[in-house]
Amino acid sequence: MPATATTREELIASCSFCGKPDATVQRLVAGPGVYICNECVELSAAIVADAARTTSEESSRRRSQYYERSTKDILAMLPAFIRSAERVESELTGWVNRLRERGADSKTIAGAAGMSIDAARQRFESAPLE
Image (cartoon, rainbow, N blue to C red):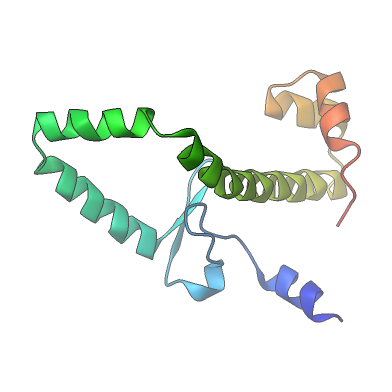
């Protein structure tokens, strides 16, 4: 079996924030369509703790900086957003394929996804089985 197939089979999920696979982190917590590793949880806790010590003026300044990013900064962020979207789409395709392998039809998948049958077929029927 090729190395990529073995790696793919061993990979359960990756952190939605840093992208590390489950095998390289201590713990991966699942949410609705997302995962977060223990390292990102720790970083998030530090950020939240820092925010709790921040004045309202500083908080407003930071929010303003966030929304007033330059075009250059926004363009620089696009590749990371695209990688995240591709990871989510790949994960979604994998789950839909698992449902198909278990006999779920387009109507069942569409209902669970909150989509029309036509929209589900358009989006998922072209996804190759892995």
